[in-house]
Amino acid sequence: MASRVSGWLRSFTRLKTVSDDTILKSELQRCLSTFDLVTLGIGGTLGAGVYVVTGQVARNIAGPAVIFSFVIAAITSALAALCYAEFSSRVPRAGSAYTYCYVTVGELPAFVIGWNLILEYLIGTASIARSWSGYLDSILGGVYINALKSHFPSMAGDFLAYPDFLAFFITLIAVTVIAIGVQKSSSTNVIFTTINLSVIVFIIVFGLFYVNVDNWLDQNGGFFPYGGGGVLAGAATCFYSFVGFDIIATTGEEADNPKKSIPAAIIISLAICCVAYIAISIVMTLIVPYYMLNENAAISVMFEQVGVPFVKYIVSIGAISGLSASLMGCIFPLPRIIYAMANDGLIFQFLARIHPKTKTPLVAVYLFGIIAALLAMLISIEHLVEMMSIGTLLAYMLVSCCVLILRYKPDDRQYESESTMVDESQDFDNIEKDNDLSSESVEERHKLHQSENCRDQSDPMEPSNSNRWQRYLSSYKYLLTSQQNSSVPTAQTSRAVTTATMLIIVFSFCLFAVLIHGYQQLQNGNGWLIILVIIFTVVLIFAILAVAFQPQSTVVIPFKAPLLPFMPILSIMTNIYLMLMLQPVTWIRFVIWLAVGFSIYFFYGINHSHAQQDPGYEQLPQSAQTLLSASSNEANAND
Image (cartoon, rainbow, N blue to C red; front, side, top):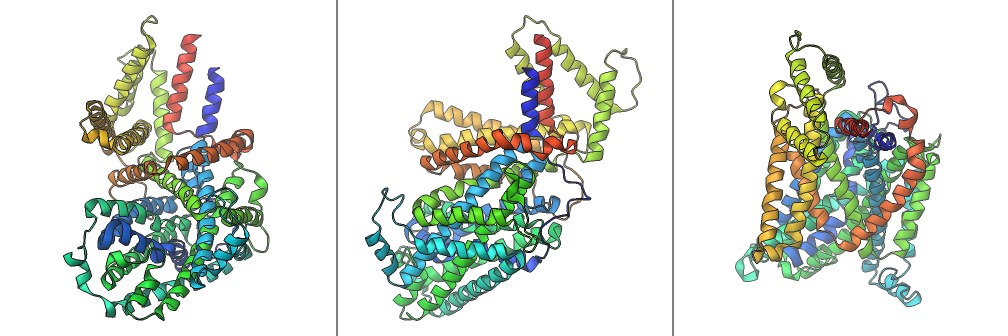
């Protein structure tokens, strides 16, 4: 039984290894410059957020203080963006967060994140296609949608409101452009993005002639009509306007110089989008009072209200271009994720076939493109948007975890040296204590190993739970003292960081769940909930300190995320908070999607994984090695 459990754990936690010799080799075409990557990131990010979200948040949630909502959302997004930038400089491969997780955490977590990225891009493509047809219909005065509703009444409430044929065909057109090849699709994206940015600059400059500072004064509601709570609530909504920069991370096998261009493109594109959102928000709320903004087409209607209706046609050109770039931006990474997973053997390998002329995974492009087109045609946009965010937030959280773990992990030569030292200390277990050990670190490890053996050989009548608690306490004591024995990462310090990171994730979920769902009871002074909040907070503080006390890797890479460990930890906690703010129905659909994915993994992927066929993949994280060792020891004791 123990060997079977050990085998399953090895399958779940085996890592993908990418050597220096093969890291830049790819069947895909390397042709994307830094400029191409920047326009790809802007195109995927700067779409509906400018033309729809800004007006909705300003009118209903934050007022003119939507400016600060975007600033907070930008800072939150930057936390994840910096983590993506560091990982893309370490592992410039297709697959984005999936590949990062596979290299650092293990196979099963990587499959989960890859499967959810597929969901994110499928839903994102469908929702943008639906938005595209809806915006075009608003230009035409509602003729298209009214005709569809009259000929195709609702089949299942608002979930299948009416078949949107325009969304279906526009998705297929975008899929065909992507299938032609990365160079052609990149050129098309550059055209759409350039038009969109030009229109945004026009709106900002032209709008400056119509600003009225009185719109921020008290007689028109003031600058903070909804208070600080409105600013924070608006930030949660504005956060999703920045989703899209992670598209750049999927181009690791198509960028000319991925180790430098991908981190630079992520940061530059996010900065440009942040400036655009803030500038549009300032101009918009200064031209008309926030409560007079139109929810669905704020910018177009805004210029009509000040007597320049012709501008709405220019705005419509920018909106259609922006939505077209966002649509292509969502489709572009989808086959790259699928290609990476199929190429690793975790999903059906025919999806990894590369067409010799286009140098794209043609089967994956069209198969999942048709699925996205069907979703766009049949499902209402409200239900699509509900499902889009959870995969993104989970990906951001896991990438931050991976950066944290990898920064505190010893490099290969250091790991091999330490493994040898540990083996030597085990060989000295039966030698007398007066043997002279040449290394002080070996001596310390020998003492630790002896103390663990003493615990393992304690009275067999002693309850096993007591033994476990002693081990946990000893492990935590070591969390805070391991750095004293080494100035560079070791297997034990790496294990300490992994353990502390898991504690941060678990107790962040617990803390935010209590704060979100028990807020009213906390206000009423519920003693038990207050005690829980205190306990969860104390554990989080100790876990964060445990990470901060460990030595970081000194390996030189092209880009390193700043302010470790606090920056990725803050990113982890922020994404967990936003995930818990989602509706319960979103979590139910998420679980169903996971169930489908697990059926593929357990009946196909776990046996066809290249990690099982290639011994080079068989490297476990230190925490998994410890768990397997502990399981084996317990099994031997029981025998």
